[in-house]
Length: 371
Ligand SMILES: Cc1ncc(COP(=O)(O)O)c(C=O)c1O
Image 1 (tube, rainbow, N blue to C red):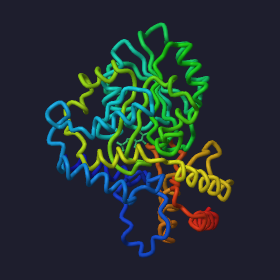
Image 2: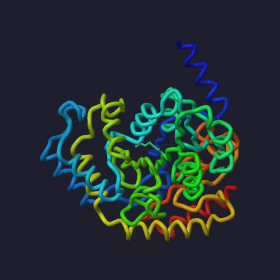
Image 3: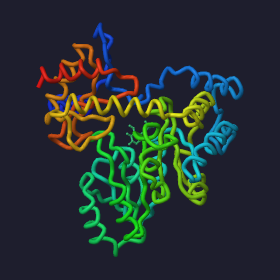
Image 4: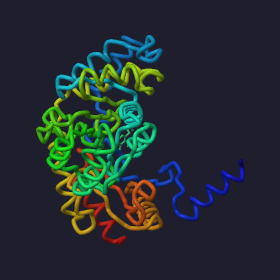
């Protein structure tokens, strides 16, 4: 057993794939942080903290059980209703995006069904697809001709088709093409599942993400959103038909077998959803434009949003660049294989509504002198 652990770890080390928990406490002067998902800069915002405290004062520190076993409390209803009125879908709140994706895909597609997932989909979507008895096939990232081709070749052999995508891909910063996906899903009578983890809060008139911003919520059959990123909290929701919600309550194992979110968290989530996000969205859009302009020659050309990948091509380079930036007080993330395909290793810049142009200038200057 020990041999297995040391062999595995040394193999990871040899291939520059070894992961450790980043600890920047040794960098005395952190000046700008570009590695959080706090896209709206909400994390320390006091009205949301007060809303969390009010819920905790009312209902206590914990849910005390799963929602089916005494862990349900009214703030969860309020949160689901607020989301329903924004999305026009029945909503089930679960404990995380990981729970949402593994729970949903783990129980919805059946043995005779086919799941078609974008190659760049997050691990939680792929893990969920692998938990299910359905067949999983993956189409090239944002290549909808490839998706249509796979469907054409395989459709006759399966009962139901599920197309799985992120709206804004967490590693490439690319947005999915809703028009293409909706055309294909309609032709194939497939169910379209869209994970909006990185778009919720940042886009849409009520902050519900890119499907809302594009006016296609009715064409998305199932939507997943998370509270851990732009809403700077924890938890997730799955939106779909009322039958889907009732099915999940009966079959979604992470929902059934896990203690519900604590009231503090649900209070924060409710306040986050009901706030007006327009000002912060505009600030995020402005700093995104500025960053793209300053790093235009270096960023992946398909990224038009607040996730800005700077491709470097090898894990060694990704680690070395991230370390050198950190020494200058600029905290970024090295993204390496297997999170991204081989030779697509990158430095990931996550922008926030409260980033200043000075922060972007410091980053751009440091990057230009590195590469
Ligand atoms: C696209 C996507 N979906 C789901 C998740 C998981 O969400 P959570 O952190 O709430 O478990 C992530 C997390 O990084 C993600 O990027």
